[in-house]
Length: 298
Image (cartoon, rainbow, N blue to C red; front, side, top):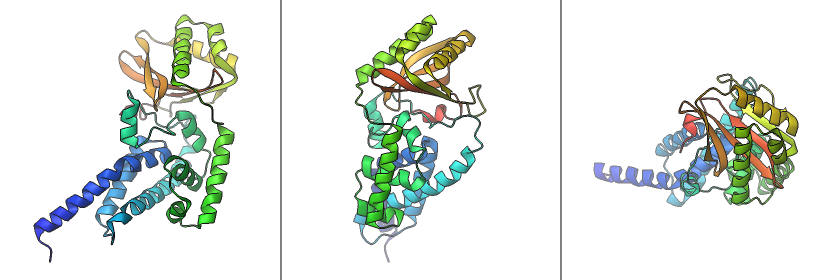
């Protein structure tokens, strides 16, 4: 019979093995759910199940943890989608407010595939498609590993990944946009809003730009997506005119990309993330729901 000290050492070693996997697990869960707070709940539930489980081989830990977490996220996402059908206005992912891209990589293992624009496209996938795409294209899992997670065949895993990738690329084709270009457009956007410059905004926008505002029924926001350069520009300038004294705009890193934060009397009120391609702003994701803003800080 193992001694108390041996049992404590085993428990400590098991906890250490889990902590070594935590950044990857949080990274998978956040991209699956679009919410850091929900992701950490799923990781905690995975830890509790891990603590009660005995594995014959320590090397099996990575596969067991990934499978357990992903299946928890799939189940949670299915129930969350039912709740989102009654959500007030557009539902947007919870923004991560990040000052240092390296910090994001440490917390979520990799900064790849963190943009708000991509997370919004991932919302169009089924939970299994989303899991397969993320595990394969972002976290470099093999098809046989993904098959084990999803409880399917390797050939079916290939089909699921291909179908998901095709839908992601159709929803948001890949464009190479430098960080400097994103900063330039962000700063010009902020200056045009400050000057109430309609023409300045129109010069930055793609013709079919869309802005989605997530207030969740807890902050005043547009209930529908606003589309078209002229409508979006006038919508934003209307917001500027209605802004109370004490409103400030500051540059920030949102999901590792240049974005903006809006404060009113020093309190965080909204975050703005930009989808950029071909030298223009293609889309804007504005999160105003107060439940999402504080918990999205890193």
